Amino acid sequence: MRNKIFIIAILSLVCPGIVCAECSDAVSNGDDAYTYARRAYNESSFDEAQNYARQAKNAADDAKSAADDCNCDEAADEFDNSYTYARRAYNAGDLSELRDYARKAMRAAEAGKEASENCR
Image (cartoon, rainbow, N blue to C red; front, side):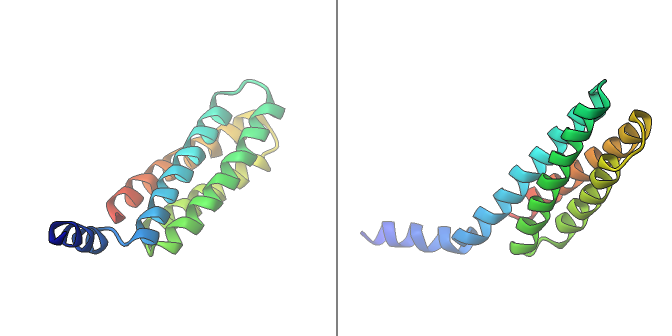
């Protein structure tokens, strides 16, 4: 019985439930932002690429919120950058411009994921 209490106490110090869950949400949403931005970048149809850029923008916004919730400032900043670039990709006038911003959104989402993983 004492061993169980000791293990629970140690785990609660290492990973206080809600904080770790929200940091893992930041990683997961950041992964989604990266994936959608990559799809936008690789898409040959402007309309489909724009749809992926919209999804990347929404996922980056969710990742930023989750990073804010677990007090991971560096990750939140990177996800905010990813959101900005994905929004610019979505609002781009042509496929070339969209791809340029989608590539930047991918890089920022990847940096946000790495920062989130280090916040755990």
